[in-house]
Length: 344
Image (cartoon, rainbow, N blue to C red; front, side, top):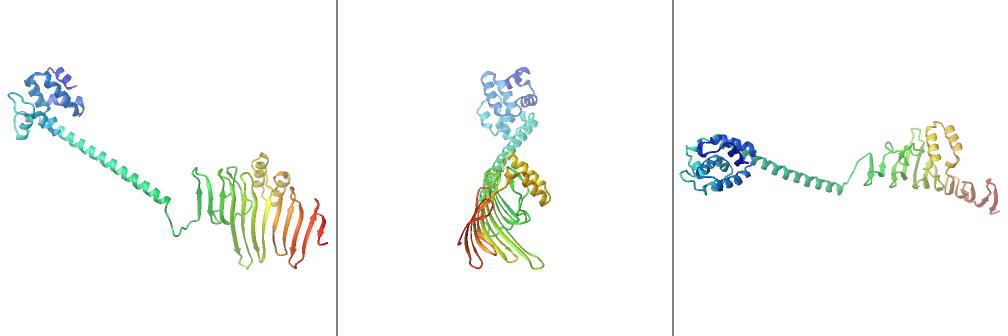
């Protein structure tokens, strides 16, 4: 590239203005000083001593800026002082002609060095910041606390879906059925833990509540329910205390498939109902959405009881012990009439 520039300018010995050729050369190589060595070596083999001397004069600022004066000092130019030696001695001959160019190139070299330093600094800073952040993430994953005060904790799986929620009664979440939140039928004012399956649907909960009114009346209760992937709870454990009337029991149900179109339509109408009468009418309209009870085992303020039901929810066997100590075993027909009883 440099040889072409010199040839185009009809380069002849020392008649070329050094600064002019230097400026043209800088424009063409655009500051790529590595090209100077290659081109200067080629000129050594193909030009006369006079041309070499002028070229040495032209390229002297480049070599000075690169701190490689030894490259030119090794070249003996007849009748001309060594370029770098002259520059080192502070000569006033040819060196003065290229002083502006020297300064320009030295500034360019200084800027390049600063850019390299900044790049190195940016790289080191980035690596340090990355190491710090990775360490912070690792630390967060293994952090331990003596006390953690929150209103609600959402535990997510790796896909971002809810796996568990620990919540107060004010922030209790709505149930998620078929991937969508719906209105909760009960337990809206409870504190507890809600469990979710891998689809993100609710699949059980542990809840509790208790209030004492200003007049001294009170209610409390706790429930542990077990749902399945497509249904509401199949098993539930409850206890309650209603102004001193205590009860505790375990119940099992046959639950309908909540993913069917009929159940989804029932759920939409039931949520739109605003009164108990409207909700009962919706239940009657969609009989297949009932959840018939299959067994009951518990006690209340009158007796301890075990009841077994058929598939439609009708009780067929009762076994109970009353508060006064009477024990009975009863067999019932489909209408609920006792057909056999012990003791007779």
